[in-house]
Image 1 (cartoon, rainbow, N blue to C red):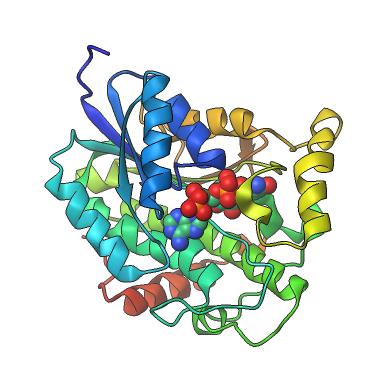
Image 2: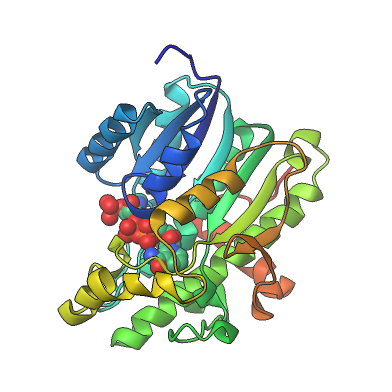
Length: 311
Ligand SMILES: NC(=O)c1ccc[n+]([C@@H]2O[C@H](COP(=O)([O-])OP(=O)(O)OC[C@H]3O[C@@H](n4cnc5c(N)ncnc54)[C@H](OP(=O)(O)O)[C@@H]3O)[C@@H](O)[C@H]2O)c1
């Protein structure tokens, strides 16, 4: 590998599943250094080694989205590394908790905290580091939309405070609802950030594009890791067959390639849009509730201790 990378793209959860494949495809551009942000340092180093063997310029840095202190430490470390200019941020990491609800060290329900709040802080802290024309992508999911009839419970968003403290109800459907709600939050965050960047007086901030991505169902990933064993078996060995005849069911390779393509900066990039099954799509009616999006943004800013204003 002789090329010296001239730009950096960060992929959260880049050690496995969709994030690994996305990092692999982004790294096909020899000008790019891919930073995989992983909660497990060993898993991050192993993935970095695999990416390097594929010819990808990659670095692994530790990031646990369940800890606001870890998000801040990641950003400090990222800056200390002196990497090429940051041009892309892929907010991919996520979890679905099929067991009893848990609170993070900061006291928030863990699905909300990892899938939304940690990424919210990460994006806000990294905005000053982003070059003009950068690209931010939030990995959401079609399960945010009850019209998609995915079999998962509809999201419920009454207020950020309710979602952040949604720990009482037990059982699998409650865990799934927390997940679909977190994926709705990803869309609120995408649309609100895009609106705020567009309203900025700073041309650099106005030039940053933000989009949301639905990878489709990707059976076999680690997302079902704490489901009951029979469901895990079906997820790993039966449901992949659906790729042959059901729309929007994909391998991580296919969705990772699409996510990488959406997440690289370039001319005439889309902005403030939702992509599903490889094309621009209309997300649910609820996801376009601008009042909810603003409330989520402002409450999240209070939770993580930032102003939330984009200069
Ligand atoms: N699979 C699907 O059918 C599907 C469908 C729609 C959307 N999605 C979305 O696609 C994204 C990737 O999911 P996947 O299917 O590839 O699942 P996956 O294989 O479980 O990968 C999830 C990634 O997120 C990381 N992660 C989890 N908790 C974290 C934390 N606290 N801090 C930092 N990283 C954390 C995991 O790290 P570890 O390896 O250390 O656990 C892993 O790298 C998620 O946002 C998911 O919601 C998936």
